Image (cartoon, rainbow, N blue to C red):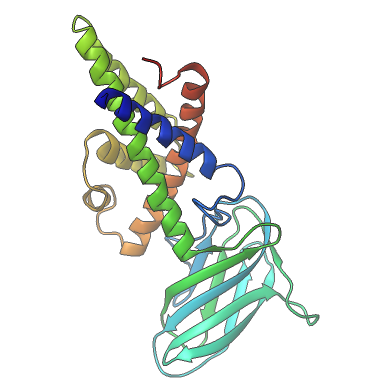
Length: 271
């Protein structure tokens, strides 16, 4: 009975992960834009943002806290040369609401954020800006936000935990039935290594960082914060966070591909 419950949890993890990838679902709402602060921003005192989505038309709404009491002009642009309009509204103290749209006099219009382009936000009077919250409004999908992105991340790891529980139960059952084949665990470990080895970053150093981070977390069981300290020593919290989310996004794509392949060939509920 216990084995069937654990196997069912594994199947549930696969099902829920699949559901979260099919359009908009109440389980993991919002269009997953992959919006995140850039680890490196060439403009001093500015904030840079990237997205993992393909070319998409959006409005961007940011809550920013600036250093200093003076108020300067807010500007925003994309690294592909697109000039944008940034309209600010003070919320309280040094906390501002900033809406970014296409640079046009005809009212608010969504701008085209091309894949790979970096959004840069500046204030002439602020020596440093801090991101408090964000919301993105795509043209043909529901909004994405900091809270929704955080929930999707939590939900992904919940589903992944379900799947791992079911997978471990299946492996344990096989090892119990066939003790003469202890090499099964080594085969599974080799499979994990091969999946990690397929993941690549935008450069060779980033590729090595991403693979090392996945090895520490998934294979050695090192907590994420400790693993980030080992892989990216001396980097800021923002840089480490950006590295983690890039790693998570790349691993998720490869892992879901693997789950799809397994789901096509195996039925985890078979006795």
